[in-house]
Length: 312
Image (cartoon, rainbow, N blue to C red):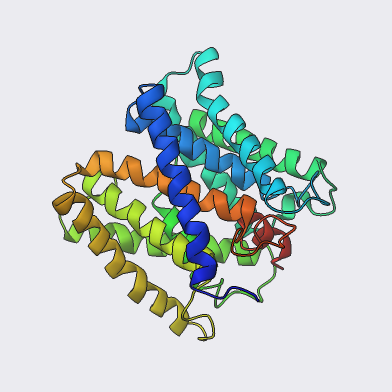
């Protein structure tokens, strides 16, 4: 008997929590890292997982879960953790970590928004390697020419693609669709920043940063893991509005608990939550809904790569 929502999404979320806690414990207790550096490793790790989502299950087409997920998880961990190490070898200090992360994720957003059009017709592994090369070159050239693009757009990326389901531009052809997606994300990002300013803060401050990453957590949990339950059958734009009605109060509640009940500083709290967000994304990308969906033979159908490959 198939497991239905919300259990279908909550069961994997338990494993996400275990993975994130283990990642933090190993970083803090064994390698004696501060939580800021641990968050950096986690974000490079999840960026590699996004790249993995573009590989179309290559070279694990015939494998089932949890084997295929375990392989992709290990690859994502190893390659993700190697990023700060290699940057150190090349002479780049910690001040480059977050700008590079921001630009790499913007590369992911471009690939998804434009329906993976850069590699149309390419077979694996040429397709995924070309995508990865594009994102690296884009991120590095961006850093050298104009710096980095603040990631405030990223929460809006999740909302526009997975709660709004690209409404009202779902049937629009490329490249017009990709352009309009970024216009919409930019508009919502401006509204979010104006909202922060109403509370006398900004995206770049620790308090707003914690609110932002909690908002990302709830957007991803509800749209990826819970598959927009209990609003799955609601039509747009009411579905997207309902998504905000669910996620925004949960963001405020969890913010209050972290700061006022647990007594965690906003800066440190934001870094901890980024680790959990990284594991939340990665689990759905590499394992899908396993173990709630044991028969799955593919990486997550809700992943960014699947969206990019199938969106027309």
